[in-house]
Length: 341
Ligand code: AQP
Image (tube, rainbow, N blue to C red; front, side, top):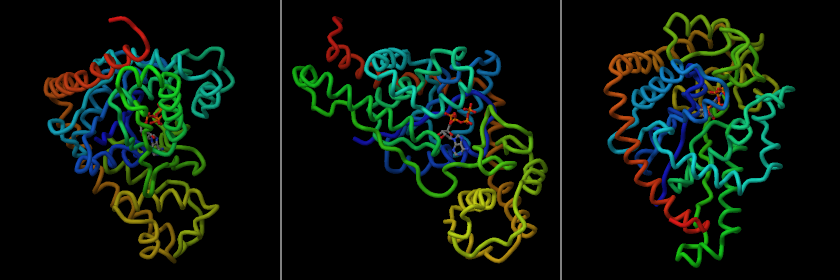
């Protein structure tokens, strides 16, 4: 059966990009798939995290999933480190993936910068762990933002190489030749890559923001959201009435994309409404819309994190159910690889 897996790393305060690129898209998938939504704390520590912050952000992400409408009883919400099988399968995938594949990852290159001698080995191997996250559950669909597309392609390469390298053992153990499915990215609609409000060519991000005004955090209050949108970089021209008029206008394209995603409309529909109007009219409308969507989300997150015992129970129950699936996969994988058990 088809299964959705996705995760967010507790490496900073959640922002509008995480919400529109990932969290908001998690919700409708629950109708058609069995969904597993993870807080990937083991990914977070690929760069240094203060332990108290790591915990706080882990709770916050679980709360964000639930506040957005993920149902933790019908589906699974848990934090990755509670299911040790993630690390175990990642090790096997470290031995399947090639150094060259990892070296080509643009996120690694961006994060390592000029200092690649001094980043953690975990940061380099990150996509291997991501492949393990998805494939432990034989995940078939992965809703992510556009920035994760390359990592997902690598997950597919790892699945394909595992199936190929172990083909005869997979057959000998009585499994189908496509033992691991090749997971498909679900990256659709507007705002799959939300950009910084100060620079339309840079991704909005948890950990790398040049200015406080560049990022809308999910926990920002109404006044702050409004101020950030009104001060967002834009241009002097009116909005076009057709999508191609947004070419070479990265800031305008970003703000229109955000409006479309928040209102569940297409970019074309938004331009049909606002084409010909300037940012003086568009920005207040966008600010009102953003506040109307984000304020209830933040209020519910605050309510949830006020009772950590409740979130802990949800994460523990989710982990128990996740572990059941993961343990079964690992029994099979150990047989396929040739580990005696
Ligand atoms: N700017 C974005 N626009 C759309 N989607 C985004 N995502 C992240 N930034 C944007 C999506 O959010 C999910 C969680 O991402 P992650 O926790 O794995 O972190 P990331 O992709 O590396 O980006 P962040 O949030 O900016 O974190 P840092 O700065 O710590 O690296 C993913 O689905 C991602 O695509």
